[in-house]
Structures are given as structure tokens and as C-alpha cells.
Amino acid sequence: MGHAIAAARRSGALDPIGHRILEERLAALTAIEAGCERIAGTPLPFAYTLLLHRTTWLVCLLLPLGLVGTAGWATPLFTALIAYAFFGLDRLSEELAGPFGTEANDLALDSLCRTCEISVLEALGDPVPPPLAPRGYYLS
Image (cartoon, rainbow, N blue to C red):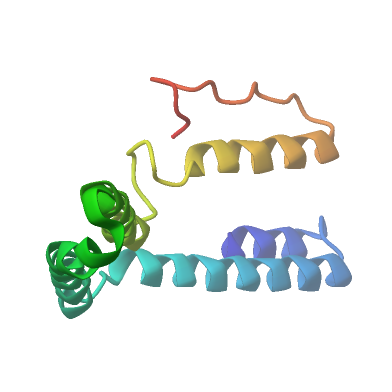
């Protein structure tokens, strides 16, 4: 993209102010892309995952012992509710560790890019492609 901007400047199709603005935008996009690459390439440290998983199991196994005196017969119910929340948080940490992908819970990057593409083409007065339709009830 930088070469295309430079070629447009050399040919006179782009004035110096427009060239500077496009170069700034390109630098900002590059920085954002680098940040996304770091997120995608940095896994959740194994020690954190292990600690969260073991702590969840330990709390859920010992919780009935602490609740039985207070909750009585409702101890299994309270334990199940708290275990559901803790194991849900454990699973959530694994989902949040990898936001870029093609699974149902990942970011809908194709759809976001299409929305940006539609906005740019509308501003340029060019024909606009249709928005992406969900496949299998989710956007990719």
C-alpha cells in the first residue's frame, strides 16, 4: 500500500497533504495489525491456565465441606451453582486467549472488514457489495 501511495504522489494524482494523511493512516493501520499479531501469537501462559484450572477444582471439591453446616440439605445445589460459575470462568479464559479464528465464539473479522469496505466504497461513490450473510448462524 505504501508503494501505491508513493506512486500516486509521483504521478501527481495525490497532493502532498493527501499523501501525508494517507501515510499516517497506513502507519496507524500497521501498528494496529502488529498489535493484533501479538495478541494472536501470544498464548495464555500454561502456568495461569493450570493455576486457574486446579484452583477451580479445589474450591469445588472443598466447598461442600464449608457449606454443609450452614446450607444443610441445599449444599449440593449451592455447590453446583458455584461450580458452574467457576468452570464457566475457566472455559471463558481459554476462549479469550484466542480471539482470532473461525469458530462461533471468535471475532467476526470477515464481517467487520466487509462493513469497513462498504463504508469506504460508499464514501468513494463506488458500487457497494452486500453485507456478509451468516453461515451456520454465525458470521465469520
